Image (cartoon, rainbow, N blue to C red; front, side, top):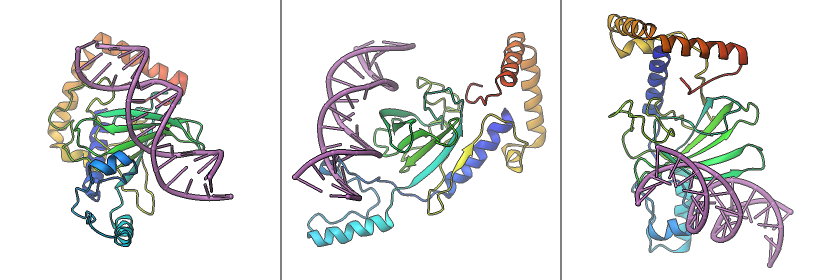
Length: 240
DNA sequence: CGACTTTGACCCGCGC
DNA sequence: GCGCGGGTCAAAGTCG
């Protein structure tokens, strides 16, 4: 588990570093456009411009200032209808819709960690594989990752536990998608070793193993979980 | 009691 | 102009 966690965190940290900074998702609603221009990037159209200028400006914005859209796929249980993707941020659900192209409902989330954070997230099950949740992120967080100062705060009604870092992949023309398959163990990669010296890692693992194996409750719970995994033949995520 | 979720209604862009 | 569909709002309900 520790190795998986470290690997995922490294991967996602690298992904986030490579992300292109842009926010201000297109404001369609009247209320949004009336009281805030939403332009935090300094490319605001001049308000006194004529309609043609506005059009050209709009075109420019569409061409150059697309909101950063990224997509992430997370494998979960197909029976899990929560549509919750734990990426370390705190999300507030503000809507749910059943779209035409996909019978699964699509959930709409806003980042509630910072009131001014413009990031929105759409979560919907993959039409091909019901066990995969596809999360589409719009915009970029304008606040630090909430899991960093308090790695295991755990508050937030189970929406975010602050344990799995955010995963955003720039959705450019190639429409890249990253899949966080938390159901299967993966071999350690080189990135794991960045977390510390091998000696320290080994010491940490040994300490964790010895501590956990001394706990009979943990043993029984682990046995039950593993047996359930084999019996159900069903991917299990986010329950660890 | 405050924060959050649910869900029907509403808004608005788009195609015909 | 009209209808459809995606996205958002907001009142009511739920939970700790």
